[in-house]
Length: 144
Image 1 (cartoon, rainbow, N blue to C red):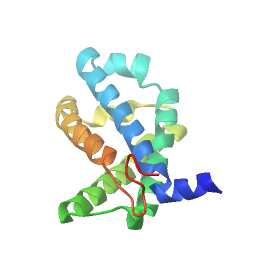
Image 2 (image 1 turned 60 degrees about the vertical axis):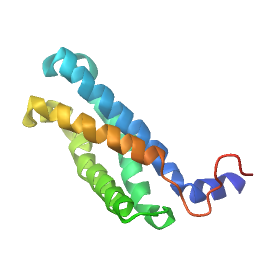
Image 3 (image 1 turned 90 degrees about the vertical axis):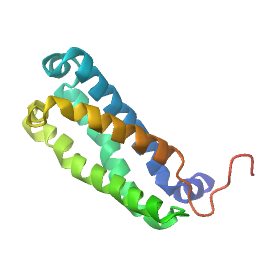
Image 4 (image 1 turned 180 degrees about the horizontal axis):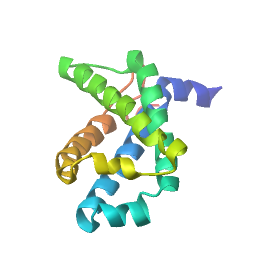
């Protein structure tokens, strides 16, 4: 029962799923900038990769919304940004999950190539933010 209580207290570990997803997104967008979209789709962002990538993304989005009331928002902007991040994940889920139906990652061609630049900045901000999320009744580092 101890693990389940820690699991609940830590927001169902949704921040870790979000961090893993954002790190994957950073990898994909950086790689796209270096090798181009055609090579990215051919060798890295394959349908199999995208279907696997959709799993932590979906979990992060759902668990993130479920843990909303557990998050400590000590500033108004943090509540707003958390809502923005969860909305971003929620919108991203069907984009990536559709690969299960189409077996294609051609959807990335709908986004302009320059899209990777601003999204990388956003992803770094999300990464830092989610890394620093604290939950109510969560022990701080060094506490028992």
